[in-house]
Length: 171
Image 1 (tube, rainbow, N blue to C red):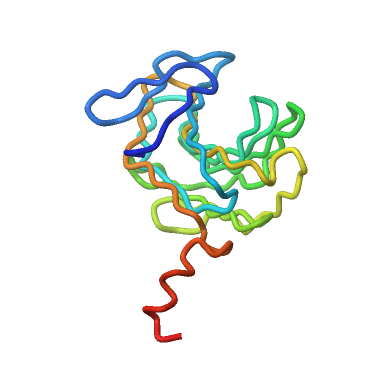
Image 2 (cartoon, rainbow, N blue to C red):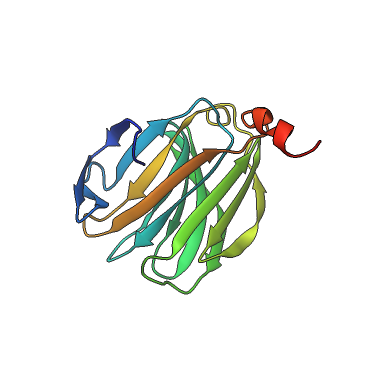
């Protein structure tokens, strides 16, 4: 997350020992995002869960319209929230490991969730107009004692972001 501007969307965030944590919650959650020029991304973070849920948000419009991927201590979940109504799309057992990476790929309407280097559940389609094209992605937590580290977000590259590299591939 270095070199990017963070926006505290819900609650407040702090950095201690080079890790992000939700300093205060609002409505039981905290969300911080970065703005990209693309909705299609590969993103992830190393998550340490002490209580509640910890993970990442994608396609953030506002607290009523977004997608989140998280670990709740037992399961990895992919949840879309549209017009304030959450819908769980993936809810699969995944052994918790402190500091394991939670990674999500978003390719148009296709979302995949990985935890600790393994695909969790199956690819999901999210095509809701209120979230599909949003370019704010970031961190999510429901407990101030949870931490996130090594956040990365990259353009998926399917919109020509890396086309200048083609000259080096021999293509």
